[in-house]
Image (cartoon, rainbow, N blue to C red):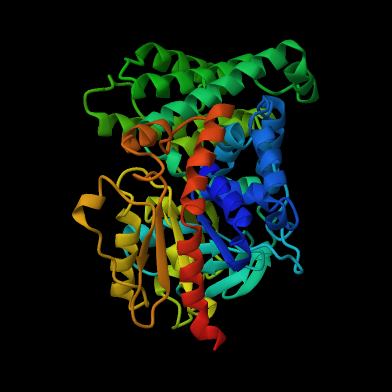
Length: 500
């Protein structure tokens, strides 16, 4: 996010930003884009916009009340079928980093008369990635959302709505920018450590609920429904369930918590609803078996609680528990459902819903969105912000383009450059776009301390301090200022034939 901001500021200062027609982002870079496009014609005043963004990112975080209100809004406005971890991630994680709740939509962010580069936000279709079938590359622009290579699109404002054979059958709200940032930037959600982090964050919210209960919030709800079961007991079951998941993830015996949950559930349901699983000692040494057990256990507990009461605070967290158990991300209605179009891969038409996730989980650079034939691109400036091998994405893109017969230059990297990359590479081919590749950390802007910078600013880094903002923006900006003449020369060579 910060590196892209630093690069764009320097592109404008060197007079090169006006040459950029599209700005396509994946993963964390989309968070920068979402901030930029809040300002109309940001490309004419990036320094001013940068100061605003840095000021916001250096401010206090979104309060839990604001975050919970937003989660409640997501839950109430959407069909329950498409409420997923992406909604939860948006509220309890993305807000920590971006320090705001942006309820604008992508269509709100775009003025048709704008001189800014046209924004493209990219994600992937999880099913297509897993099956290696169909078209995994999915994009959002102010006008349309859909599959980049297949060419199947729907109006962005209708993306989340329910379709059948090409006809809209039920409206859903247009996704807002907070949700879009969560959808694009969910790579952090991968792995057990991040499950622990999410359960801890959910536990924090429960703590705040206890405080609100002391102020009388839950008692008022109880008055409205005299037949409602004891709120304290319901809440305690949810709290124990969170603690039990954390215990298993940390390799701690959860037997006491299991007994507590079963006892309270039996009391709440009058013995009518019991956990499906029989009581048994959980074998924590078999981690996969423990995961499967806790998935089913969590769903069973949440389903039992769901039969007990349905007033809004607990119902949201019951649904959250189910989402955590199912690990369901980016679920939305599939606008291609039952289209029966021979030109569209069957994989894209079969299911009523689709799951979308961070494009960086497949390729951490949005090449395929700009390589759409209709865009007729002459030059791609690839700024690689990936962890690890700074050439992995460009080499993988070249390989995939060759397989898909998409024009793309051949990429050959000297072996000695892998550990000590330079700050400017040019790849060309016959009837292909020119590709400029710029690794973020290189021997020019980092000297001999490339590894130190990579560790300091790794992908899973938490929110930055003011000094870190300044430092990273300066490092990224040097890649532009040091190569102004090289960039300008390649731009001239690329657009020259088209002009003549």
